[in-house]
Amino acid sequence: MAMNRRHALLLGAALTVSLTAAACGSGDDGSSSGAGAAAPAASAAVSDADIQKALDTGGSITVWAWEPTLKQVVADFQAKYPKVKVNLVNAGTGNDQYTALQNAIKAGSGVPDVAQVEYYALPQFALAKSVTDLATLGAGKLDGTFTPGPWSSVHVGNGIYGLPMDSGPMALFYNKDVFDKYDLKVPTTWDEYLADAEKLHQANPKAYITNDTGDAGFATSMIWQAGGKPYTVDGTTVGIDFAEPGTQKFTGLWQKLIDGKLVAPTSSWSDAWYQGLGDGTIATLVIGAWMPANLESGVKAGAGKWRVAPMPQWEAGGRATSENGGSSLAIPEASANKNLAYAFLKYANVDEGVQTRVDGGAFPATTAQLQDQKFQDKEFPYFGGQKVNQVLAESASQVVSGWSYLPFQVYANSIFNDTVGKAYTSSTPLQDGLKAWQDASLKYGEEQGFTIK
Image 1: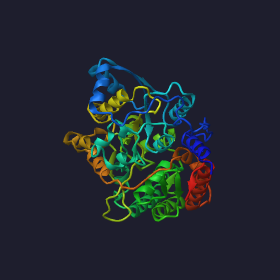
Image 2: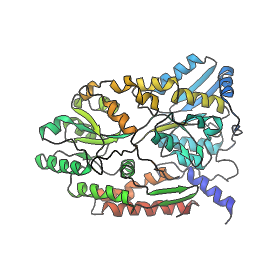
Image 3: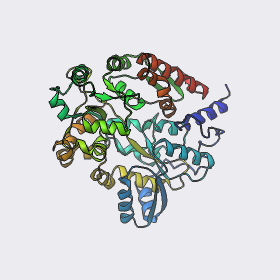
Image 4: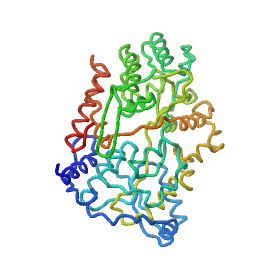
């Protein structure tokens, strides 16, 4: 096999991040790191003194991120280090930014020094060598700083390609008023959750235990919690197996909910979804720890009604959760000021900036903040005064280890509704939909030059 051509195909695949599934610029020739006219790679000998020298010398860096609490972090960072100028740019949310970043990398100009990259998307940029291995800048010293889920998610192979900015350990958000009205038990297992779903919908055909029209992130998080490991990744060799036991646990439960028409056919983040959360016709959400602020701002009618409980378990007495969402800050390989960029990453995600973001409503990935008594004792008026962070911090410590995403997960997620989504709108079984997703994803990977296992 012509290895240069294979390398080029892999670089192209790793930068295919548009959710339209139209690969915007996969024509790297494999001779550069997928970053156009990249700056020289950071030296493996970078020390804390080198990072401090960059701060003392000053300069300018550009940060692409959509996370709102970073605005205050930037202001505080510049006040502490007046010789540094940080240009904070919102280049779009999620995939819009990834497309812009990909295009800048391909063009070899306009690449930021720092970019927000969600955990599921990070492997694509890492495989393409489009983002810097932060171990060369000292990130290897940060073992123990972050909770296991996010810390594992920024590792690709032997490298560390981002610093965790936040996390999304899952929990059960439920409308206590609805549960009290219909005498529902807060479920501790998925079997109890199914029983609640049946009881609620029978009592009120307009009310549902939750909503779902097909969501890749939710499905993979559920499989993750069930101990599933459908994705195997070893460099450029990948495998997908949705027939494995963890996946079948999820489909066995969720198929019953679909067949019984026990989930609202309402898409998340739609106007109808917000309305359902407010009027009680959607009674629960199983979602990441970043959700409280979204309920407070988007579902004002639910104030005082909602509570948070541990994620239901597959087996009684279990203590297993998974992550749903969350982002890192990464340094593109093309950055000309990596030492200063890393200094900002460390300030924002390890040092003072973490507390600033927590105070602004972000859910941290750092063990220090999660274990802080003030953080855990915070009472949330929206949730009836409940100390919500106690539940969420406990979930963060229970994330099942060993999960990995595909090195082309962004593309895979983009075709979820074309495959698995049919199970929600037709008689296609959910397991068959996952098999179609598996086949389509593997076909794409093979076309891009990956070795399929």
